Length: 336
Image (tube, rainbow, N blue to C red):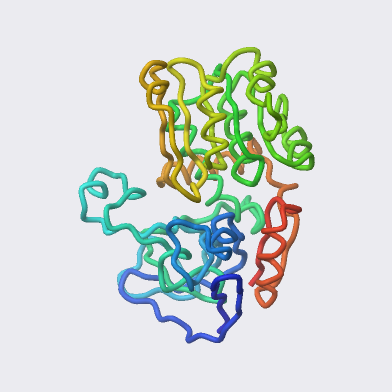
């Protein structure tokens, strides 16, 4: 069996033993696995929570190959995707139904001994979702990343008839745009550093796309919205976008931190207090978010047909990571 291993500045495909499913686990044969921004950040040594080397692949879909004792949630032959975080199921957060912020959280494909960029892997049946027949493999590969903006929009208390700014026009930014549009946002303006990314944002339905590096970017976004933003989704999460987000949001508004920050940032606490702003972290998703992601994809409310811009076989994982890190692609997939 082949699997991918990521070390600092190196992506390797190595031979590995076929894992055996234990009680409550299934063996899954990978069909497709997406290269996430967190993977390319980890490769560059910039991810704050991933230790190198690691086995990547958390945006993954495949077919159940075998089942261990006690498996009842899925059957051999079913197509599945997975929630990659691995909760303890026992801590305060897990008992409250917030397994995504488990106090002893591990993460398949990031902080675990297995990942989905492999021919086969084992996973707890409780992490699996059966893929609807209407979704092909490429579309199903977006269920996991789409869960992130679905969760973020929910944490913002919805966006219906509200003005929205989205900082960053990568995969998560574009998916956040589509989720916010489907949820009834009044007007959506995006920012991005490159002209190609701004053009992409407009193609996918943003009302305007502003150069994030412009000295007056905040004023331009506010002008394009016609007012300050009710909600800002920061899909980059570094100092420059934190500053812009807080400058964009209206008094009493909300900034949702969707991207994984590469480092600490500073915030103007007097402004947070005086303007009664809310800074809301958004950590992955929950089962209901996966269900909503599948509904959005099935209904066509979120259209990902043009989002896959490169596909590589598992043996060419290094090329897939290079494409994903290049800035020229929106979503890169590995096909096992």
